[in-house]
Amino acid sequence: MRKLTKEDILKGKDKRVELYIPEYDAAVVIRPLTDGELTEILSMLENLPLREDGTPALEKIDLQTNLKLLKLAASKGLVEPQLTLNDLEQMKFGVPEYIGMKVLEISGLVPPEEAEKKS
Image (cartoon, rainbow, N blue to C red; front, side, top):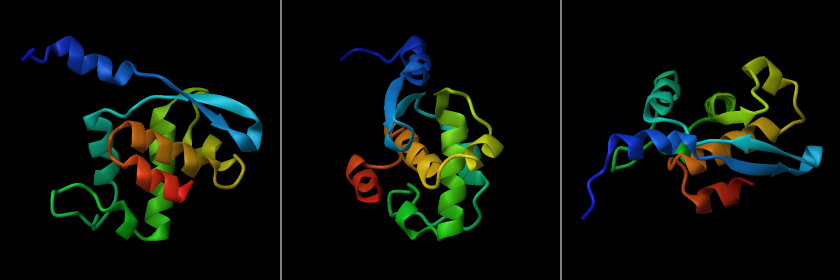
């Protein structure tokens, strides 16, 4: 079995995914979040419900907290264009949350089947 190297670990955040946004008939480029970024986002959320395995139970988060989580994920995971939270709030309804869900999905936090239910 091959040993995990520092280069393997650090290149995970270098992955880029083009995501088509139908509302704008254009694509953005997103990347997975690092463990540090995910920890930072999740620590901002109070009383985060957890599953038995310790992962966040996103389906049990109240709507306001869920929207905040998804916008934070979108702001950190967007590569092109880079947008602030204020910029994201100027987008068409639902787009920042869609981007955030896809960022969390490629980061391994949201199973693809759960993301499909919310798309």
